[in-house]
Image (cartoon, rainbow, N blue to C red):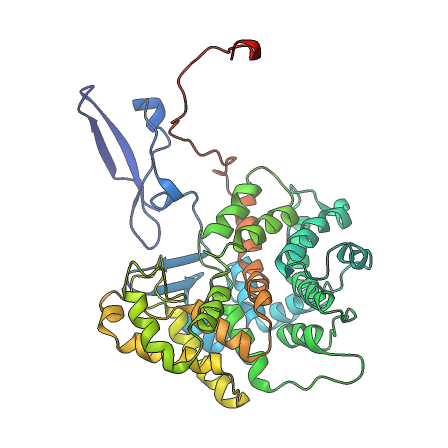
Length: 431
């Protein structure tokens, strides 16, 4: 990382100048190091949403939104989606390199043998209303894990940090499936450790004691692909939340629970849930053209959910990958669902309409992921939970990286104060 160049800032009012180093990463635009700005100038910076601020140095994920590029540890998402598996991607994100055959076998063994959840967690689960949102249950249960593993929370010990990361990758699917089954009144299903990661999760979700579950091969393949695409996405809101909480020295279970809470927001992980609600609002395939025209009218209050992306100004590379899988899932399963017909007609209309093409409002990964989940009979309220299972791999990788960062500091954003000026207290009797 080169830091030989600098940027000179001039305070025209005070007639002073100050130089600040330019930091360059392996890829991407340079950053101005403003850590000395308050000391040298007396000023802070104002950046709502931190959209122009790098909060850390990270070697995990790189995004180029203009070119539609997404790299995990330098590997293009297109290559990983085609050739890798979610568990191998989780190893890559955590360790920084792809595993050898023996390394992957050992990693898979570790994850597989930490899939069980403590029996007492079933009592905890029973304290929720049966109709509670699964994300509420997941958030609470993941946060509670610190109470079950309090004897291995020495964050100064790399082995204990790694064990916590493995436990989270292993147990989040088990707990997520338990939340779903509790919500529909089904008995809890223990993980079948003779199955691989995604198949094991699907069996915990849908298998019943009265008979074995037979899944079409495309189901596990599609879900594994979605998990890969959702595994990490740089310093998004939930990952930044994990890092912010982690900066206080909080345990990893609390950090990931905080990430789950952030992911729950409809502007973040809840976007694919919003897509299905939009499709229900449109209603019928023949009403798609009318919906497209409403979306162009800024005064209509109607928005097409699952189109465009805050980061990608071109096509979302994940959407390009998942689009093909979506059509394969629908074809292989022979799904006959009016909402999916609405979605396919909407996709076709938006990709052809000059209004959306000119503004690069292409279908994004949230648009397609919701369609696959629905085709696999995963209920809408579980969509964000599925996202959380995948993103746990990224969250723990960022948390582990942060623990080894010599520059890491407790997060403490500044503000522009807009409240009342100094004033004297008036006793209640005089007000």
